Amino acid sequence: MSFLDKFKQDFYTCFIVKDRYKYIFEGLFNTIKIAFVAVLIGIAIGVVVALVRTTHDKNIDDMPDGLKKTLLKIANRIAVIYVTIIRGTPVMIQIMIMFFVIFSSARNGVPVAMMTFGINSGAYVAEIFRGGIMAVDIGQEEAGRSLGLGYIDTMRYIILPQAFKAVLPALANEFIALLKETSIACYVAVNDLTKGGEIIRSVTYIQAMPLMAVALLYLLMVVILSKLVSLLERRLKSNER
Image (cartoon, rainbow, N blue to C red; front, top):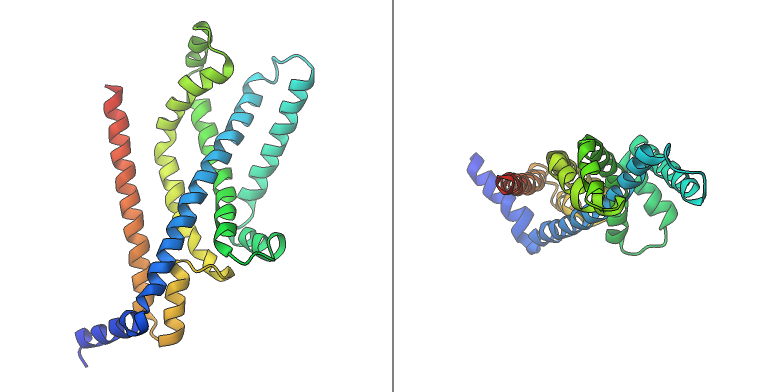
């Protein structure tokens, strides 16, 4: 049997017989859902944690003793502990704790995966945003204050937009890494793209074809995401002119 004939036979067995391609498409849909929601959760957590930490670093020494200073110290300590724990432990262990300990009675693993990867991504996004905020020239904040803007409005309208442009490449890399990391969800009974390939392998005993199909789909998603980020970067640069 020639290589082409073997390829056709394996393709037919893996994806056409009994509509096995549906395992791949269902898994692909779940992977995209998990990654998209996790990105939103990660950004939300990351921005909040970054703001808490930068606010603490910039203002704590000048704040008078009182309730606000105490609350800021507590919030900063919580943020530091959160970042330390999440960045210091493997995501595989985190998702196993979420599935088998915290949400052991959950019947649908997709929302748990969304939350787990979102919390994990939030720690990295927080450090990315914190670096971007700290990199903005202090004169920008002083200019905002001179215009009568408060600290929150200065952050919202002046600092964060500039920080976002500065950290966009790093954020894109984090989101690409997150998309690929979702593949480990298959080990805790989530029907993602990798799980779809595993199911096909287990019933056909064909190894290469399902694995190559999964790898190509991940590659395609990463290439599309990278292209969209490049377009966004060019759009942001053109708006600066």
